[in-house]
Image (cartoon, rainbow, N blue to C red):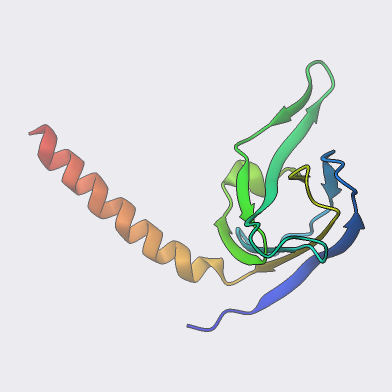
Length: 134
């Protein structure tokens, strides 16, 4: 199955070992994304780039983070976002030994095709769990 991926974010930032969060503004077209990371100054043996962090800011609490997602260096990482992640903001937390970081993110509106399969699997699991309870 061929999906129509749209590039929704592309950035290259010199970080010189600064592992501060990089704010990422995304206009998602669907719940499925692909994240690619690279670093021109990276040792070829390095495999970690950092973590994609979903978050929202609450006026009474401050910044609230969801589950971080590992992103490999020079790798394409496929992710299915939860409903909560889909509706909130993202930051990228690079590992501290990188000099620069390139981040590209694609999204697809064709996620409904995948969701059909997920719904079938969920239904099978529900039936299985029901039978186990008997």
